[in-house]
Image: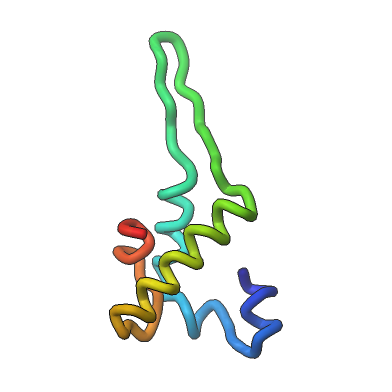
Length: 76
């Protein structure tokens, strides 16, 4: 994301609040438990991240918010 934003003359700090990236991790990495094991499942694929971030950025623009926030990512 940093690379993409820098290519258009922006930065992570200009688009996302500090804790928004933590929300992305929370949305796309989770634990799956079964009787005998606990497995961590990661959906941190470029396409999944791009879709989540695009949706959150569109919502921020719709609501007139200056940056994408933790709460917005959780709801996107």
